[in-house]
Amino acid sequence: MKLFGLLALLLVASAFADDSSSSEEENEGLPLAEACDQEACSLPDCRCSSTNIPGGLNPRDVPQFVTVTFDDGVNVNNIITYRNILYNRLNSNGCPAGVTFFVSHEYTNYALINELYNQGFEIALHSISHRTPQTYWFEATKEVIKEEIADQKAQMAHFANIPPSAIKGVRMPFLQLAGNASFEIMSEYGLEYDCTWPTIAHTNPGLWPYTLDYASTQDCIIPPCPSASIPGVWVKPMVAWSDLNGVPCSMVDACFFIPDRENEEEWYKFILSNFERHYLGNRAPFGFYVHEAFLAANPAVNRALVRFMDLVNNLNDAFMVNAHEVVDWVKNPKPLNEYRSQGCRSFTPSICNPNNCGPLFSTHNQLAYYMQVCSACPSNYPWVGNPLGQ
Ligand SMILES: *[C@@H]1O[C@H](CO)[C@@H](O)[C@H](O)[C@H]1NC(C)=O
Ligand SMILES: [Zn+2]
Image (cartoon, rainbow, N blue to C red; front, side, top):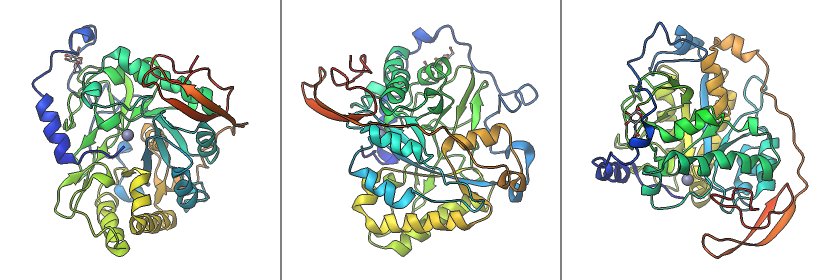
């Protein structure tokens, strides 16, 4: 689903900013996060929000991580792009390049999720319904987030036949946080990091991932942001890009002042100019956050991205990785030389014998759906409140 531009998000956010009462009462039990105590908060389990390089490393000794992510449903159309541009890529240390998919359930083909997982990519959560309006997410209680996100973890593992323990990341629809609620659910259901929260104030130097044990110093672009102490949950900030007029944008396809969509060379330069802010700076992880539809509609942008990934795969101090690998590194920061030789991530391959299911009746909108799964077919179209379609 196409995101609003950042300006639109800011307008929407400020329109909501006065209404702060609804989700507060039910969080009474949580302690308010205090200013971060650098002594008490130390790796691997705790990190204050900061632009400091983990482990106090010199930028030249830091692997520059690049996290390419795609949002929303995975289907027979967008898998063609994924196969074309992502499969069989290696980083300069010989390890497979990583990519993270923040998947929403509706219209997702779970046999294709299994295929992406078996390519070594990361499968993460982006809700079951991805429904509009955005206020639904703004107001979402813990109960709603449990049904949209925690239940999606079980749903994904079941239909794609992948281990639940491999599912660790969350991005909320429309980048709309719900205060403490999504982080509390993450902590209760073994989800390790969130990649929803944009920063436009900490881009140069860039903000590194941190935990929510203590109060975050990150700017809150799309409120409500969490303010409770929620130990052990990681925030992987979406460090904004800067468009051609210096306006920040969190998703590449939401940047406003962009090069001509048919000009591959200008797009390549645009990507590089944003990359260099990280690479020549404090080496905070660099994100290329996009929807496949933007690449499919703009072949020159797609080619520019391929050139950029080829470049990264040839640099001996930059690595395209699954977003989760960044959190792993931050917990246990190793200098570049050690990182290069530490060996590659591993995973247990998982088989899929695809079943074509449908028509499956859906109670939420009376439509008939078809879906491909690696499990037995469900009886109804799986949805919020009935994630396995029983
Ligand atoms: C988050 O929890 C803190 C501490 O209980 C509370 O003060 C704050 O209002 C909560 N935020 C939201 C948006 O619910
Ligand atoms: Zn989305």
